[in-house]
Amino acid sequence: MIRLVERMVAFVPRKSESKTEVAAAQVPGQVQRLSLFGPPLLLEGEDAAAYDELLARMCAAVKPVDVIDEMLVADIVALEWEVLRWRRLKRTLMRQVALKALERFLIDRLESNYALHEEHFQSYLTEILKNNLPPEQADSAETLAAECTPNTDEANDKLGKVLSSLGLGNNVLDDARADKAKELAHEYVRGERDAVTLVNELLTDAGVSMDTFMTKALRKRIDEIERIDRLTTIAETRRNAALREMDRRRAVLGETLRRRVQEIEDVEFADGELVPVPPPAEGNAA
Amino acid sequence: MTSERKITANRANARASTGPRTTRGRARAARNALRHALSFPVCSIPALSEEVETLAREIAGRGASAQTQELARRVAEAQIDLHRVRSARHQLLFDTLNKENYESYANMRMKVKLLRALLRPNPPDISMEALEFATPQGPDKLATILSGKAKKLLAMDRYERRALSRRKFAIRAFDAARARTATTRG
Image (cartoon, rainbow over all chains, first blue to last red; front, top):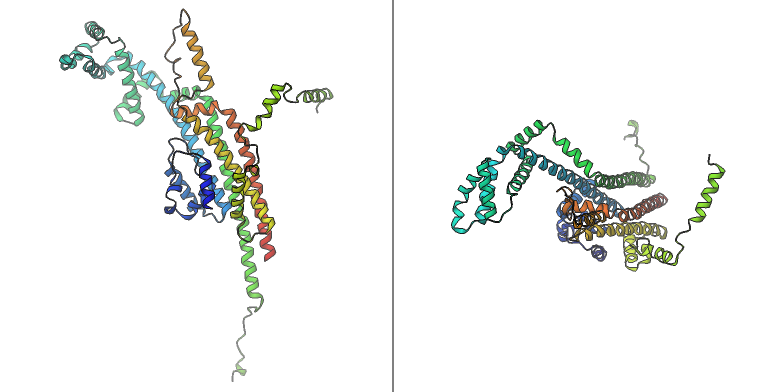
């Protein structure tokens, strides 16, 4: 059997190492035996330990009774893993597009409301000036940035001159705005209170919600989402079929076992029937 | 009810559908089965055939009758076949994910189209959104691969479905035989 396991492991070249193989001695016997049906088919970035945990939990719950049962358990785990993979992928794709849409929305909002990112722009500009000014002037970066950030004609002129003297383009403000929008969107997703309040206010003012962006995301990636949904359905259907098969086998096995027990009992009691012996009559006692 | 005219048309069409006619077409069609080799029975591949035998012995257990052994072999054959198909599909995804600059055909076509437009004497104004199809990474890459390789994946899925079906019926036949043996022994 060991030879077969080795061969099947070699069947799929894989970078991620599963603990099912590495620490076979540490896992329950059945989990170890399940490696008979090949190593887990994991993709880059997937957690082999999580797969093994799922397998161990399934084994503990199902308690496979023979090789075919183990085969079905391995199948259920592999298919469940696939279901989880596709669901995760769908969620990530939707969130990514929605996040991008939110970022774009925030860039527009910040553009029309300079006060919202003035402070961020100042620190962004300070950083740029520190990196580009000659070393002897680097200390004055903060002061210079403070002079250039107020949204006045004078400050804007000064900003233009400073940037052109350093050979930098005029898109520093745009970059800073995009940077702030990205930061804000990520804070919003993480649920940071200030960001959530601010973004919710901006969304309400504009008469939109996160659902608007999610709808946009769905519309943009509908083909990919549909394909992923199809893969999820296929894996779910196959997993359920394997579960049904296991149920059916348990019923057959249960019936066979019942019959065997009955037969053993019949054989056991066929020779000497257990007929209750009547107590001796009182007159014959002596 | 299907009309006589329709039946005649269907028959005429079917007679015309006889596969490729040119030598080149026939040569190409002859190589179809070699594309991923999943249509070869596992028993025709020595290494897999050996695995089938070992697994069949595990399934049948000691002292199994010739009939039980044969039924166990069918289960093992379907199982190894299933594993072969799943491994091939996994390998396809794995290898493509590892290609650093993987691009879907649709993405490549878009890039070429855009480049052509930009190289014209008066290039058009292109928005940032239009340029948003850089080489995909992470989840985007997997989604792109699923789209780009959809046809291949679909073909592999058909093999998987067949192997699953074969295994299901093989397991049922094996269980039924075992149940019969248990009754007979009793």
